[in-house]
Length: 258
Image: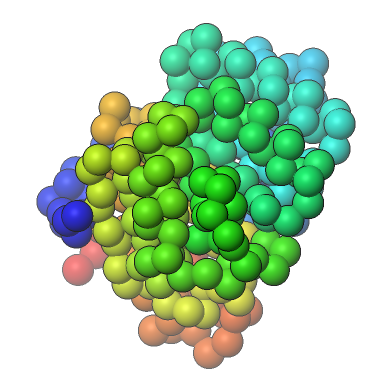
């Protein structure tokens, strides 16, 4: 396992901003706005196309796709399936965020149906990744009660089994394809007090995956950017409300000034 190289992060961030990839976002109701703001601040272009009648067509146009299972409904699941199928047909990278995996049997069945479609990257917290890999987990709703370190072996197993790239987030983030593993440290704990920082990170992964065929590097670059932004926000914020604003600023300013 290695730390993600600074030079590779800088190169991918520059590439992201130069290409401004269009990211099709099918996410939960709670995080629509912050996800759009995060993508715009980072240098990508968000589009929330949620109707089943157009989700498949749009996924075929977009440069990357996020499917977040946070607030599923029958219609939304249909739209997500059409989008994932179109992305696979067009070989467009797509990210699965298995929100609250391991908590409710119906939700778990939905999540596993998307895992079977072999997403480009699965991005989740430690409890979600442990649950998907068949390990015991102790999540509480959307929050993880497990450490990312404890989910590393589960992530490697899941990556080899699907196969895909698995991105497990926590105090230290890990990205693995089952053989190659990189770690990303840093960030700030106040990020856990702002709704949507994790879900929007998954959208960042989709944005970076749109500009490089190296999916491990794409996920690692997204984590690095998010952690840098959190560190910037923590230096300027007094509480979670102001952290939210400064986090968006940090995404925009990272790599733009000394």
